[in-house]
Image 1 (cartoon, rainbow, N blue to C red):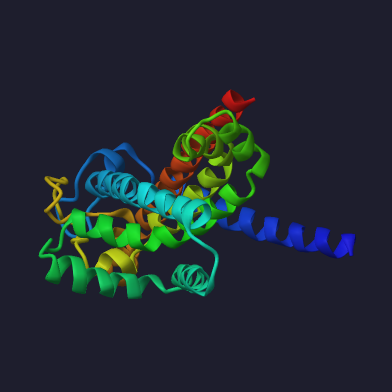
Image 2 (cartoon, rainbow, N blue to C red; image 1 turned 30 degrees about the vertical axis):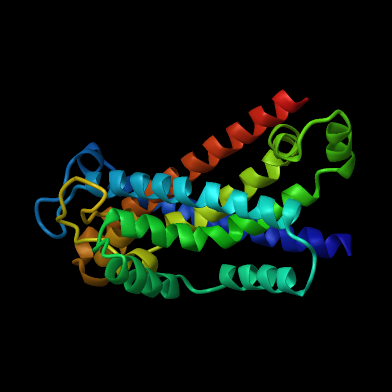
Length: 270
């Protein structure tokens, strides 16, 4: 059994390293300061600066919306809600939402945020759409992290006369912070590379200018890469690899930041 598990792990690592090395080797060939720091002057010209900043703003906004909503929902489900059939149905619905294809979230975002709430095709609509897509993962992982906090922590704190909310805030949440951070990393990794979800709600062509406001359209690396793969001439292939590499670097960067925050919270708790 051990050899089987070791072989499966080794196979996964080989596949992962192969993918990353392929993107790295091909991406470095097309990477340049001109690509990173300029905006495209024509549809398929060098220049990914608007898409880079658009992707960063997209991730930050989606996390800023989904994290507090997901965390408060997880706290309510685990700390306040009574166990019963309704709670079971809610949890199952959240789990099912985590498996919904991203294009469905994109269509929902277009119908609800763009048309009904009249956000228009904008960064704000994209934030809300990606936040909806991230919420199920954040809620489920945060709830599991809260469940894993020993009950003795809560009982000891409340025995000292501390209110339930202060116990949750100052005792339970710090203890659950590593698990919550892991959920944010998983949700962020999924949202950062989405094309289908932002396709309907505000992503614009490669020639878009810099991000000018929450209610304006924007460029993003996943959408730019999609357009180039589908319609760009073959001589732009090195640029396509470079854009893929930049996107991976951005995602890794946010993951590293989340891991550092998690490790610091663990160190403070000790």
